[in-house]
Image 1 (cartoon, helix red, strand yellow):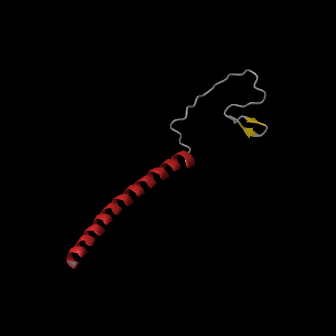
Image 2: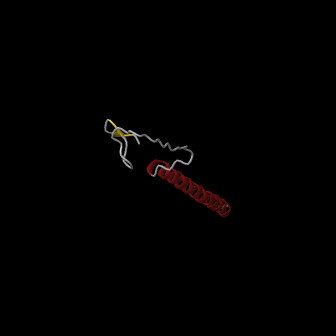
Image 3: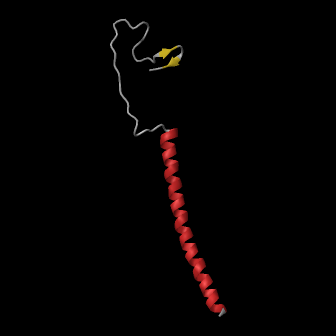
Amino acid sequence: MIATTADALVRLVRAGHRRQTWLSVAGLALTLVLATAYLLAGALRVTPFASSYRVTVQLPESGGLLPNQDVALRGVRIG
């Protein structure tokens, strides 16, 4: 009777351990995916769904703008 109860308890613990391992692996994989997404979107500023466009303007009298220089408005870079 004690052996039967002990065997059942051992089987229960082993089954729980197997599931715990898979749950840990799934949790680790999810954490890695979320961390990679955070790094790409936040730190590296990679935005795959953002649209962008380029504007080119030719001005005969630019009022102080120079080729290949940043454009600033009141000291703030705007282009």
